[in-house]
Image 1 (cartoon, rainbow, N blue to C red):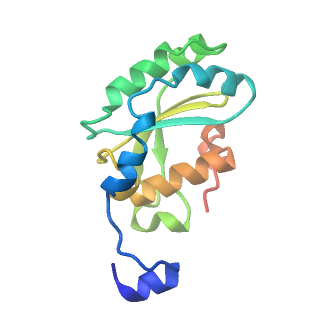
Image 2 (tube, rainbow, N blue to C red; image 1 turned 45 degrees about the vertical axis):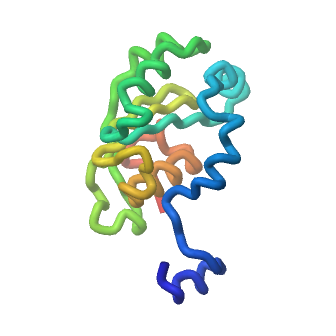
Length: 153
């Protein structure tokens, strides 16, 4: 909530981790099951990333992993059989976490599940470098590239 940072970001209000008024406006979507929309997205070639912090007690990673494994889609068997691989941060934005394992990833084609270590319900708040790294990797298509071919900037 530093004034200089607010000016640089072009905002004129303090940061709040949860704005309850805004949160209430989304209650129309609250606790609805949208998993049935994912198979057509996967079939259309859209990259889908499901992630969860391993310390999230609201949407725990075990439950999220379980529904990704149960999801009925064309590559379900391959996804369920896929090995989990370490998710290691690279690139300058990783800072002191460059080269560190920050999660565990399961990927097949364009469907990815990432368990983020030492993160709760708000992964970007708890592990900002890991959150930026996973977003960069998703946008770069790096989840299925061998680690030496991954470039996250």
